[in-house]
Image (cartoon, rainbow, N blue to C red; front, side):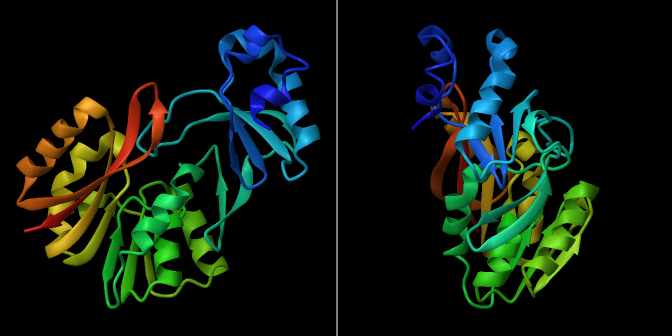
Length: 265
């Protein structure tokens, strides 16, 4: 049952048409996108979701775009337990986080597995915008990597990262609360650059910290016809070979999150 079907008894057909078919679930929290025209009925919508899905304890709505240097998208509680802290169970991990303090999206779950499968025995992996650790902890726990660097500038994300590393017994991780531009010449085998809104500002960081022959996983936002411009930016920043372009979900009408895999040459 999708969201429109669920709410067909309390919203008119035209009102249902304004909603998206689905919503994100992070741990026990449901995240909705409520159009302004339906705000008078938002609590009714939230309570219906609570009644229907027993695993959901809190319903929130996204109230703004992802913003600020810490990439946080604020949410407002509509119903249920009055807390935005939860534990997300994903890919064999338990990740504690607070939606009003850190950036997190469940939509990259399969993408994180894709990266995990590319980690080789003995690899040194640097995740320079790691958030609460969904990539770094997954790699440290389930790959044969030699070591993993996990870094995030957001102090709240760093604190949750430390807790999640302990909770998941992920050895081989060194955690940092630094600006990614403070890292130099790491010579990592794999570098994860998951900061799509500001990715072009950190291309030099990717080239500086990945060894020759190493791989960079570079996330960005672009429309289909803009992707060539993102590729051109990468090639202008340093010597490399583009290996793959993976679409990792939409973020708006016609705009997508992409991961561009490239090899340092």
